Image 1: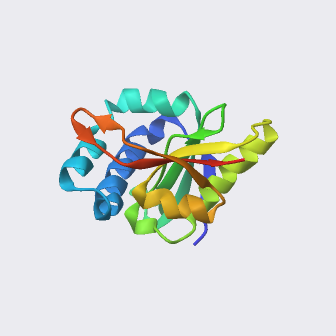
Image 2: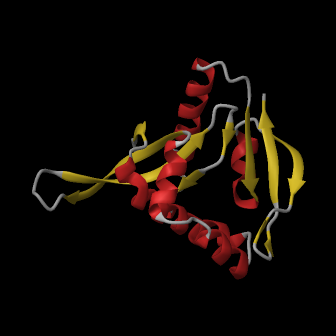
Length: 166
């Protein structure tokens, strides 16, 4: 399946926020318990706060045709299949794919876009705090674990990995 990669826009805020929640609930639940999933999926702030965070960094979305006609009759609609962001230091804060689009190359395509941007802007390396779920994906793309972390949301602790790729 082909995806159009484009820059994030404010009108993507609600859809990317819901995608984030679906991804955490639908994909990360095999590696984290119910309490962790609920804390993580609920730790987003308002749609406006979410939008500001996406606009504060470089964020791209992968858009897929839905296969259904738009309500206005102008052809196939589109849906965001995933998104990634990258700050000026090369840190990837978010890389999430909708559960309905896993294993279709969405995350790899988004990561490639972030890599192109980093190379074009003199960013020498990439880093991420990868979840247990995402660790293998990042390892497959040349990242290595620099440390194991245990961040918390309130009183709920998580395991993730500081991963880097020069």
